[in-house]
Length: 296
Picture 1: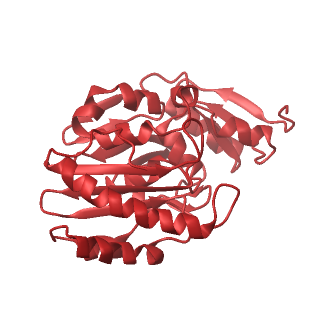
Picture 2: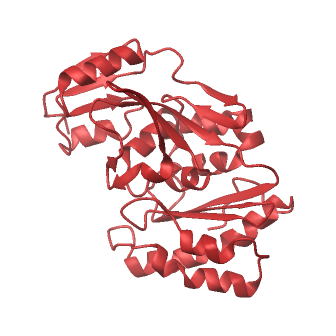
């Protein structure tokens, strides 16, 4: 199907030029980076922007660097970049594990991590992992620069904290103090290109501080704070796992759609937490399955 909606297109060379173009155009502007969400939405007539601003020619936006105790990702860093980065493998292998589940190699080569959270679909793969990592989003707009914590970013399906005229300039991710272990579990219908039916990321630190976040089972990816509090500071036992699993229903609000029923999603989230907690602990302690090993 061809793109039927008419819109203006502008390719910019700097972030300042992008901000100026967005400010002149008004509220309905879309940014083109990877385009793996934007182009299908345009094709399906799901969105009707007045202007599409192409940022692919801006130098330096594909940067993936370590800055002190943080990893910094620019707006053009792709999921494939996460898979090939030694920095990611050495310091945040959970990002590798998450990226390895995204769509297909062709999509991963184009889809950007920041584009994934800017699209803000409930099933976005990066959401739960960035939530447990306490990432923050750097934003630039007519009023200057600001930083948005990831927990304040998702406002609803396809809605974010990005204000009119603003553009994301980067993503900062704290590197947890070692030792730590984490796991991302994603239920999909088959190997290959498929959206998540349910997803969960679990992270545990050396002092048994647990962080848990779910995706695709609510209007936004979200931390499960009640589960985290129940686990906090405690040694993992079968009884504690059962207690945490009993809290899953209160942490999610799944729906029934073409991919799964809400009942199936709810049950699989319990299974994923039950498997994910001991796997994260084992990875922290150096005995768990290698990152990238599928447990679902």
